Amino acid sequence: MTPSTDRPYGPGDLTADELKHAVLDALASAGVPQTELMASLAAGAAYQSPWERPAVNRRHPRRETPVIYRVKVELQDSSPPIWRRLDLRSDLELPRLHLILQEAMGWTNSHLHEFVHASSRRDRDAEHFASMDYPDAGEMGELDEANVRLDELAHSAGDKFLYLYDFGDSWWHRVTVEKVLEPDDDGESPDATVVAGRRACPPEDCGGIWSYNEWIAGDADPDGWDPHTLEFWAGWDAEAFDLDDAQQRVVEIADMSATLREVQQDEASKLQILLERIGDGVKLTAAGYLPPTMVEQLMIDTGWDRKWIGKNNREDQTYPIWQLRDWARALGLVRKYKGELRPTRRGAALMNDREALADLIARSIPHDRLYGTPLDWF
Image 1 (cartoon, one colour):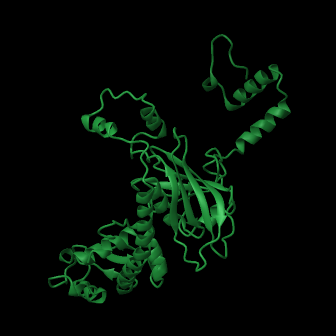
Image 2 (image 1 turned 90 degrees about the vertical axis):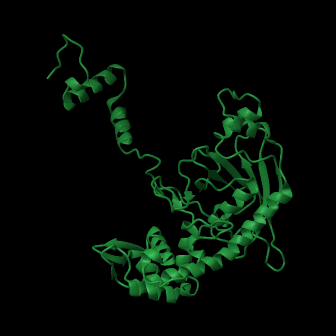
Image 3 (image 1 turned 120 degrees about the vertical axis):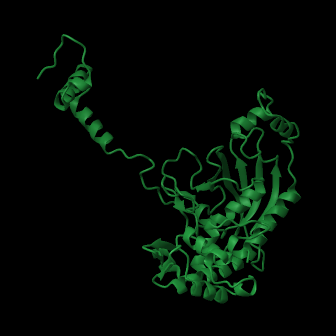
């Protein structure tokens, strides 16, 4: 059927077959060969979004013997340049490296982050490594950063990768290996040492690098800013960088991580006690709480009965058990089903693996410098 020519028409006036022939006729009139056109259409049909394509695994084998990487961490697009030079053990796992970079730069670890195994942000095939412990984790193709090491992203001098902090302000850092050094003779080199650096890290939530550069250059328009913001920027020293202070923060985070592991193992043991008591499932009370006898036994098994005043037999009045159960739920270890508290597949799989539970806690439960993790409060 030939479409009527007595009025303008659009694609909605044509059948699919008519539209196909109309497009082919128009392109033929423009001198486009039909075979070339059909090949292009076929290629287009096979297109995949870069978010849907699997990333290319370019990771290096882990070194059998750790070495020291001297790296330069540059905040990209900063003008004038903001950078830090660090000595890092090659066997650092990415979650720990993240904390070290936060302290060395001067960030406050208030936002999400990811590592990108590429030297350019435009590399669509690069692997992205992030924490999996937030609601949308992995939806954009990110891989779990847990148990991935620094020496898998970099092996030799000149190797580079990216570190992104705060998906809103988008603080991109390029990490470049400048030298590969031998560790101390005793093999006990510190995890990280701040060697040098220049300029202050930008303030959190200031709008990103371009807003920051604009302010530093004196081009920002403060009209409409509240007095607190004006007072803050008036006292801001963009050139300030204290090497000793940065090193002290890095040492503290490294020491805290070592001590924290023991805390996490103890917390994992308490979660194991809960999972063992639940078994395949335990019937909850009409109000949805654990049975009083189980609450009392859990307090004894964990040793909390020696620290908590009261009868310790009602979950709603025995905060440590309520907190333990809540964190087991938050960690995906237990769930309520038809009036019972049951282990999830994850809970059943990790019930007898304290180290794996400790790893899960390390990735999932925030650790406060002063107060520890919630399970460490009792």
